[in-house]
Image 1 (cartoon, helix red, strand yellow):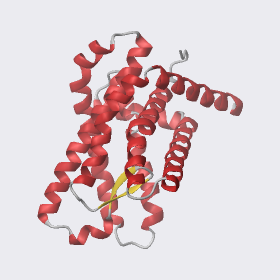
Image 2 (cartoon, one colour):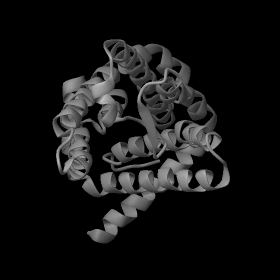
Image 3 (cartoon, rainbow, N blue to C red):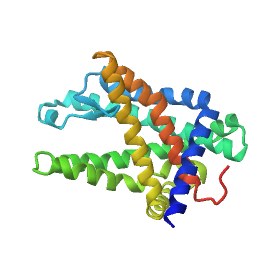
Image 4 (cartoon, rainbow, N blue to C red):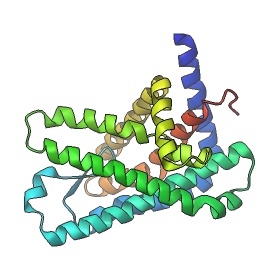
Length: 249
């Protein structure tokens, strides 16, 4: 049983690498909105910081935020989230096109709007849950321990929703149900995704922060994260989702 699970992990990882490089031009092109999404909070000077190639809100700055700051942050957040949803949908469509031999142009034109809006609303719901958790834990003694754990648990029901929406054309609520059941039934693959993601993001920071001086290294890390690492992780999560079908390409 353990050997079968390990074999499946390596098989999914192998197919993900193959799918990524086979479609690297399209995937890189569709990843550009993700780069803009992560750059927006930096350019409008919101109280954020970079960690593992991502952009996060400084909770210590919450008491000093004005109404104007909140308005700008909410607007930039919504734009960024929509761009991320747009990029995720397109990358999923590339993989779906490869698996079903449907022309990517037809897939993009016919489904991109519906899929992007559905993914956007689901991720907005998730972000609101995470914000509530962040607010409730702000200033508490064990916030640094509880927040990552609770955030991961909150994100679990949404993890496969983009793939469920795009690959199987589920409705949003049905996609959440499928994401929950699949995450629990294929927990080792989810853990594999977490480990691969952490290693890639951490290595990205370690290498370029050591080789390139600040502030240039920050933007290099963010660029590689947005255009290479995160797109690959999206491909990996899609291939994990597709592993529920017995036959892989």
